[in-house]
Image 1 (cartoon, rainbow, N blue to C red):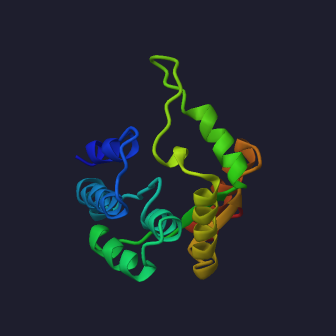
Image 2 (cartoon, rainbow, N blue to C red):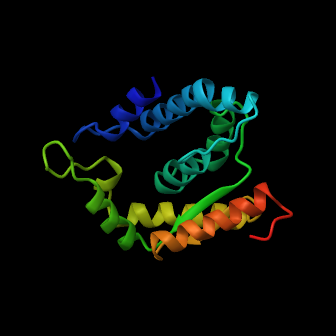
Image 3 (cartoon, rainbow, N blue to C red):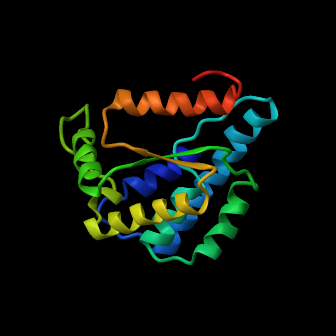
Length: 175
């Protein structure tokens, strides 16, 4: 169900999706994902790794689209069933670097044609607001949100993430 919702959001073609519609679709996707995947995994004692969560809603819909942050926090609380990450990595780089990487990644392997999602069609100003939002969130929760310089090599970023995760999971280890 969540995958279908994400498909609608990311590949809506040139159709405009209103800001509230976009928000509620993302929240519905999150609620379904938490219900189907995250809660059962946590209940069985497993670790959960998640690519994007409530911080992304705050950055994209709050800072990027201008939806009130207090409202978004309350809606995130409902959609995530109150679950919050213990540790979040913010892979930060200048907007131009991120957009150029995205342009390389959006090649459709079946047809060889470039395929963009709705966010990739946004203006640079929107992406700057989103980045600012993520950095503000990191400043407000420095113990949870770990900012990494993602302009470095994949291996360097990987090694740093591994060190931080090892420290978090094995606090007495020499990582």
